[in-house]
Image (cartoon, rainbow, N blue to C red; front, side, top):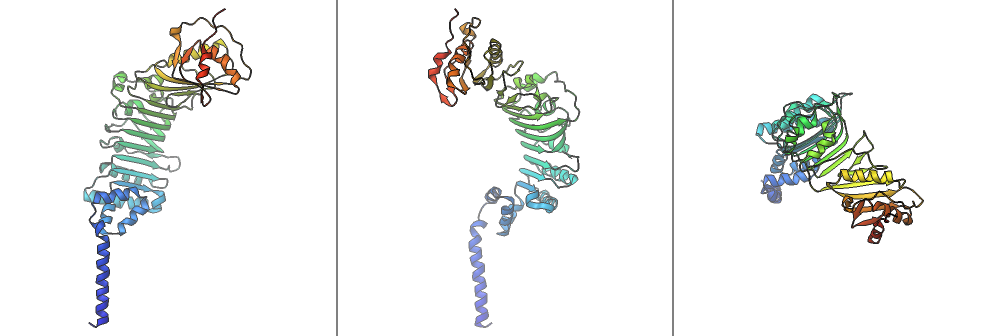
Length: 397
């Protein structure tokens, strides 16, 4: 070999050595650490790391977090997802998190992928599959039959809650745009006592028959762990929409109801209404509810104040923050109310008055003082302790 040929060989060896030295820190890195780095990247960037070294490729192919969506994979989604899950089965690997977000995937292919993820022990499952015509994806029974699930998100599917439920360790549930069979409260929530957070949006029950509460539901609900419940446009035949059910959750702290079927808007136990809302009754076993009430006063009649008194009595077990909007322009005359004993005054944590003119406020507060007491008063966004003196009602003549 001449000198020129030897120089080329030496250059090649030097290049290989420098590449090996450059990759050595990565090659020494633990697989789980590489997977943590890949998991922080988006799908395309994480996939490119597989080209860096054999170890990166192995880490990528054995990641416990799998995310398959139309944006990243397009028409190749089914093929790529199938190959990845087949490798998991061949290598006897476990899936931690599985996300399938596609509006184009064949429904049979989607169900097969979901079953594979469940069989591989998925703990976090998120499914959103578009309809074929008017037909929604029928969620495989294996999902609610999974004993490993901790988090479940299902959007745009048809779900039968009457199947045998085995997801006893489920802690978080998000379901939206569903067609359902069975009753979510009876068939799922009462059986998943570890559930801490439930979010439900636009649920239509296909049976359209009011479900009966079981004979032991009050005993069963006492074992639940639900702390946060959000309901948006849920079919009123579902028992989870019933007032008496909310009251019995023993550790429920946050309740948000955006109800398409009435004019009440509940947010963290918040009531917003044009006048005093028509709430019939509420009793709770929970302690320390934060209850935000926002109502309007269009005329200071005794009937309005008596409705307010009734409302506050209903929420007497809660810590109340009350906002009243004065929707009139002329100051009302003072008038004498029925005699009230101090013990019947409702204690309000924070009172906020919203008025177009401050001169409307003193007369209103004198009337209000027959029914409530507070140490904190706001006028709009300003703390106004000086106005508390106006809440001393006029003595009877």
